[in-house]
Length: 448
Ligand code: NAD
Image: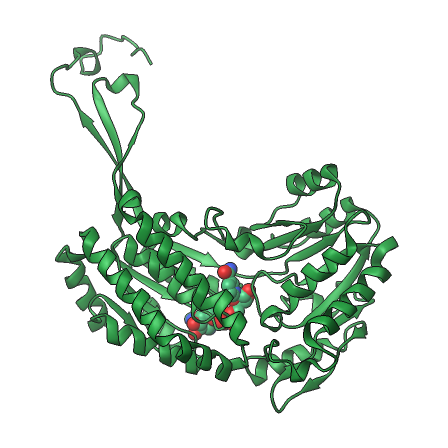
């Protein structure tokens, strides 16, 4: 590992990656490779956990292609030194911010969106002129193998390399000195990464998880709320960092909402979701066992069927759940949706505030006043009013968590900025040099 890192350090120091054309060429190469391997990626994600092809395209391959297109289109503009206003005190001068690559970057990915969450940061790392080592998740071995093959075929490892392996491999990587670490995964491992990074004072982005609520007010368009919650919860079988983890719904409309979500489940996945080509399965036995244990919490109002042979858990609604139940003690990360009643929007805000700041929050309400109140008083990474998950799709919205759900944000131009050090430089004119700033001061206070 040390050898690989040293090789990358030597290559970075040649200055090759400072050239914008070099970066553009490599992004194009990545683009071509993705097109060539599209089917391999779909097959691999299906092998790993039955990820439906449409979801593998819309949330992984197609999404990454959009980000690549955006980076290729805007790279020149993003990489140009940006002039900023002057301070009168420095007259005469000109000031610029230079986007400078950090150097060696480490990108560690999770298994749930195994392609997108590794390659999207890589686009930013390359665009900003860095070298990169990718660490795909060991829990999705088929996808990890395709990614490694693509990287090997298109990049010299002194520039971009993929290192496959589990915890021990990641630990060894984390002992090396990097200039930036981008980690996506659990809060627990995020702490391990941050501790290791502190040893070298390496800056980190931590894209973590948490329990993201969907709040449904009595004045919401309930059938639309049900459709959008059902979609956001059960896409990827609930194994999505920004999935609505649970629903807080005003008591008066709770029963109607549960009925509507039940109908949506049948409409989307048919009477037997196990047969649906549009429904993913659980990634491994450990997660399957963890999730099936949650089915003992509260009362099952829809679903609840499981099949250990293919790690299938049907889309499930849980009623009569409280915060002492195991299902409410950790991020669910699976197709189980607890629905909890609240008396008021203020109670929902208090509930959110009583726990770690979530990665996402979704509010369904037609009241501008309620929308404003929740946005002002509840703290969360990002979210939607009257929708779920869709805020991720806008590249102009920085995506990331806060507090327990992480730090740092990316997507679009933000990814380029995240992988660049903002180097501030003042060019001072030489034709004027006022003597007042130099000692002896004669006790004169400067004019500020
Ligand atoms: P994880 O933290 O278990 O694993 C992530 C990566 O860390 C993997 O590559 C793994 O090999 C490595 N790893 C695991 N244990 C380690 C250890 N002890 N030391 C060093 N490295 C270790 O996460 P996961 O199960 O792959 O992903 C699920 C989690 O990721 C959920 O909490 C989810 O919310 C979160 N997530 C967040 C985002 C986001 O964008 N914020 C996106 C997807 C997933």
